[in-house]
Image 1 (spheres, protein in one colour):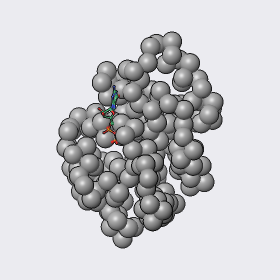
Image 2 (image 1 turned 90 degrees about the vertical axis):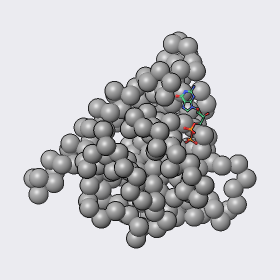
Image 3 (image 1 turned 120 degrees about the vertical axis):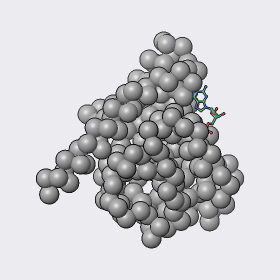
Image 4 (image 1 turned 90 degrees about the horizontal axis):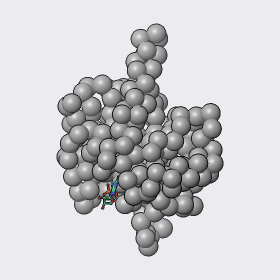
Amino acid sequence: MRVEFVRSAVSPSDFPTEGLPEVAVVGRSNVGKSRLLNQLAGIQKLAYVSKTPGRTQLINFFRVENSFYLVDLPGYGFARVPLKVRKRWEGLVTSYLFGRNEIRLVLLVIDIRREPMPNDLEVRDLLERSGASYTVVATKSDKLSHAALGRQRARLEETFGTEGKVPLITFSAVTRQGRKQLWSVIEKHVREARQTRKAQ
Ligand code: GDP
């Protein structure tokens, strides 16, 4: 699969203009977003780009097979972040989520072992208000036993109220659990985007 890093955006004027569908990924810092992106795309380059100093607070666009963009939104929840940086994050992410017609799906990445933090729930509320389709991806599933995984999954589904939406996906970059399911959800949303475009 061909995945190319296209650009980093500091503001909406930097967003790509081809109109390809977009699948965005957002999560707290250290949650496993980079490894998830790597695992999805099957290459190391993605994490490398996203982790480059100076790019962690930007929106990074990766084109997949000339078919859609994987959009790496900046992480949140860094310890002791100055208010200015927090506001910049909010401004950039809000302008993306609320202003971008190309969004087909947003993956909200959380750590399956942890209770969601207030900022995870704030991002969930932002997604709800933006009207974007989104699904919660709970990573690091390899860290829990089968029974604990089931329990935690049920709790998270309750907290995030995923009933009637795309179901929560459990994922592990180590065992690759959830990779196929995640791909099929992504492909479904990208395919729907293509069909809508053809019909117009
Ligand atoms: P990011 O800051 O959200 O991009 O997080 P990273 O992808 O860099 O991951 C943060 C840490 O969690 C690293 O030490 C990863 O190796 C580890 N990690 C990420 N995903 C998984 C996973 O699925 N299983 C396990 N066991 N560790 C993971």
